[in-house]
Length: 239
Length: 202
Image (cartoon, each protein chain N blue to C red):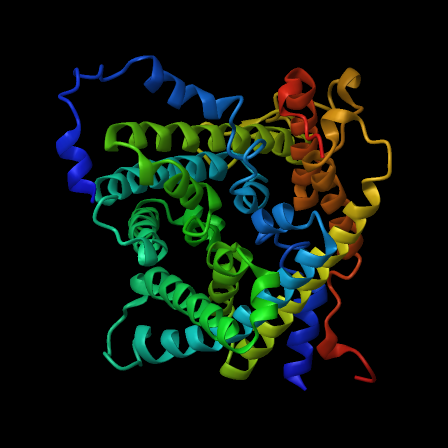
């Protein structure tokens, strides 16, 4: 059936490699079509890994890699996958990519691998990956699917890093803890950027332990959604 | 006795949703009405209860070094676990359709969606990292599923009530669901640190 339609198609003009449509694919998920706040996909890991900024950055890179390449491979195979077993085929593609990510992390950055623990494995069931495969890659050409994957991975990463930034700064008084560029912002020791003991004007701040708990991520995400929808009334839930 | 302890611990103290935030996608998407939430919750209990022991057997007798092949195959864990889950969900779907068409219709689309519910795969991965025995993994599967069921039914009930209150327009729906789940999480935190094994006369 697929062959008939292909034969009837007229010879198309060559599409630009990076035109307006492609740019939209990359930028839309960062704002109006964000996978977390608008499509509500992939929330689990967004809440669990965001206590520190550094693991969140690693997670964002891992998810971007997986979405981009699973989109690419599914799109390449889309005409050969039978509809009845497509879920399993997609899951095998995703699981293979996630295994690659896991093995690389285990080999090159073991502390982060330990810290992320099961959440690397849970990228498989991260709804963003599966959702984009179903909604986009099964119906579009490989190059566009690849860009859509990168865009959605970045949109996911952006929210992850915003939440982690707020939680780490308010909860631990530091930024990028554990990474080579660790910064200590607020605290009572001499090594901190703002020394709350020595500097009487900054003595007001104490680490907020609520921010370290995962419930804080729920509240921050709720507030991010609130701000985003207040700025863009099109997104407001009418029901 | 340990069976009951792990059941209670995984259902209440270490609730899948409210302590680990696993399975949030379907939790938020399906909690709009009490009836569908109830159906999905039951399906999750069922699938978790079945896949957990099967994955335990696979992990112990095939993937581990003492297993059938005598070598460390743990890098295949993700692929095998997710394949078992997908196959089980498909099987459950077929069996339910055959035996009870009424239940099948009420579950509808949510049955196949359980495959990508983080709580199922997460449960299997937790089971591996906590080194449970076979009976423990059965208890953990059933208890985790029951906790998930409880949480989604509670949130659905609250959200049905919320429909009558005057929430600011941008916060309506999703935003409010997040904040409600956060508050429920704080409530469940009061159970944290309780160990059923050391309670009652010891």
